Length: 363
Image (cartoon, rainbow, N blue to C red; front, side, top):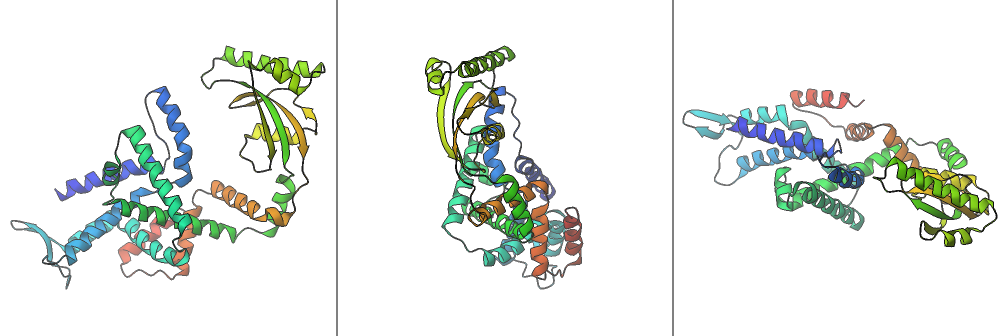
């Protein structure tokens, strides 16, 4: 039975690992696929590695068995039984050895990292708000795509309570904070200056006409939308004003004034590149395609480029994001660095070997 239970928990671990670390949710219907892809942005932002928690739960179970009043196994020599059936006895040592083989490293590192990171990053309102938001996103996701209520989600993923889940999210939050600080230490002044010269420019004010294209549109419908955008541009070329054209085509287009947008605005790259390329009081000479459809962009004005000191923090954040994207193992390296600086030492050589094997794959 114990082996069967271990296999069951191992299967759950693999299921959760696939759900969260691979960050993909597969559904059979086309409509569900589209909903899932929209939600991946939320999941991707938080990247919860829940699979390690199951080891923590087993470790907690062992502690409960050992110290619960009126129970057995005070671990005087490790030979004390923790369970028995007729003449079959499972000792504390045997259980510990089995646990070492399966969940030991993830559980151990959760405890070590939490100890070190709580000292570095005190709990505050920002952390709690972010963690609550993450938890709600997970509950909603599993409810929407698996019909799973919160309590079922928690139990299926190895959490004995919502508090345990929130505590693990806090650990992940702190791990991410440390990783960002670790990367920042390696960012040079020259990298910051190069980014400033190449990527930063003054805020640009634009308005645009959009001929929308549905995501499920046929090739013929896409061609019609592009032709409509070209027709609008031809009217502008003939001398009509932007306002006159938007009024003439108001039944076929969407019009919007975006106002001033900075170099790091959350706009699609095609739009950003076009608005930067245009001169003031000029418009797109060919339709600009984005996921929304075809745009005709009119550039109104541009502010002066900000000084480096005013955007330095933004640049550092952008460089951190770029380095995280370039090296998917950077968090493992950062946390290994933290443990080494704290002089992590192993008394158990089996665990030490397992840790060395575990961390070597990320170097």
